[in-house]
Image 1 (tube, rainbow, N blue to C red):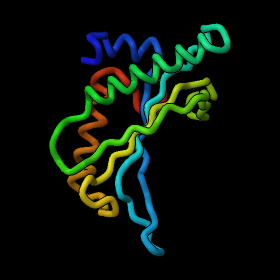
Image 2: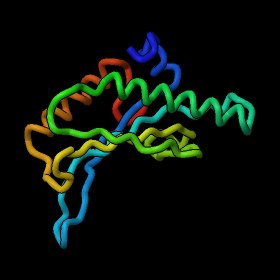
Image 3: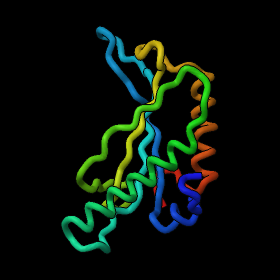
Image 4: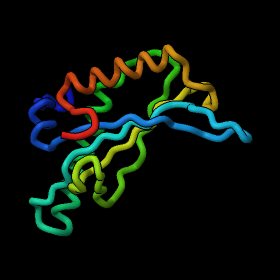
Length: 143
């Protein structure tokens, strides 16, 4: 597991959660769902002093979220997972009462044809992936 930590305890302490949204692109005038955005969130380390200490704390949390994601991703299929670079600032979601959070966004799409539409089988596999995320202790949506 991700650096031999207790992911469930870590997720509970940092109120780690996730959301899945469609990844939609335009091809000509047609909107196509080409994959999924999977956003992972954890509380921003507001207990740390402002400035460098807080930025380092946020980087540590983002890095741990990345390790968890990499642990959960299975091999096989023709899906590609791309993790976006860390955003330097906290985000505040209405779903989490505007509490500052660290965000990691992963995009999942076809590795061989980016503009291929998501299939019913891929939706089923996404649901199984969501269940694996929940099984390690992250909550869907919010804490």
